[in-house]
Length: 297
Image 1 (cartoon, one colour):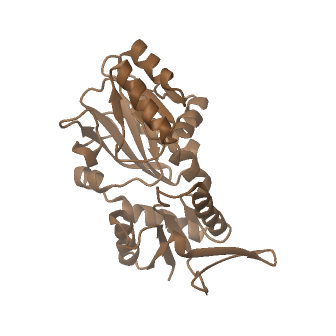
Image 2 (cartoon, rainbow, N blue to C red; image 1 turned 90 degrees about the vertical axis):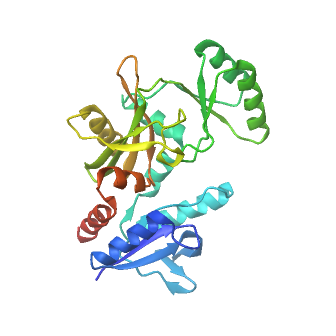
Image 3 (cartoon, one colour; image 1 turned 180 degrees about the vertical axis):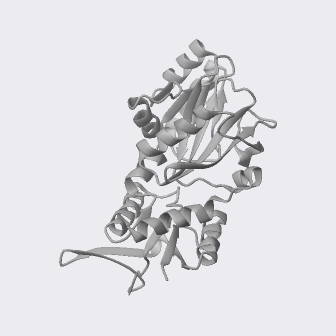
């Protein structure tokens, strides 16, 4: 019987981790919840080892679900270091390099743009005058945290003076400016969920009362089939492959005026509660089966 671990930073497993643990058990394997901060790794006589509270960590593979948000740069590097060490021993999804690429929104879009995939005009700056000028020339601009999810912290800026003042405040707290052109959507955006080399489900996230289309912020999920929007399916597959992710949630917007598709984000730790409710597809067992295939190889 395979022992399959689910890694997160919280004391108790959050919803997505719990769903994976349940699926591991239902499929006949042994689930193990692992807090990333409890794992020690080392190099002993040239061999990599991992343990928890002096006991060797014995799992056949792991799924990384979260490393935390509020910690020092050194703590983040340590946690990535733990994942890298585990990769030397067992299959790990998603792997550390892909997590790093997807965690940083700028690096994600830069990587995809250099491969020829469509992304919105996006800017990285530490100059509040950059935000002011972008609003002056474009009329509307979106500020987003460089890391994070669920649409939390994203702000639509429409006044140059407010953009300047908001930027100055952010910079005073050592927060860089990740700024993106505002693209008018046709009342929805698209979330595509990938496992391995296939789309397992996709949905439109229909806007409710705000310009944001995150399910967590009140949007409504509607199933989206390949024949309705083959371009979103293909873009999501290409983005996931370029970033080296084993599973992902890819967010795509469609320009209301031109119909052009743009990738705005690729999530290495996607939550699928809204997707499952909208489509009836549960990605959790599909992720587990994909990982088991990796163990068998």
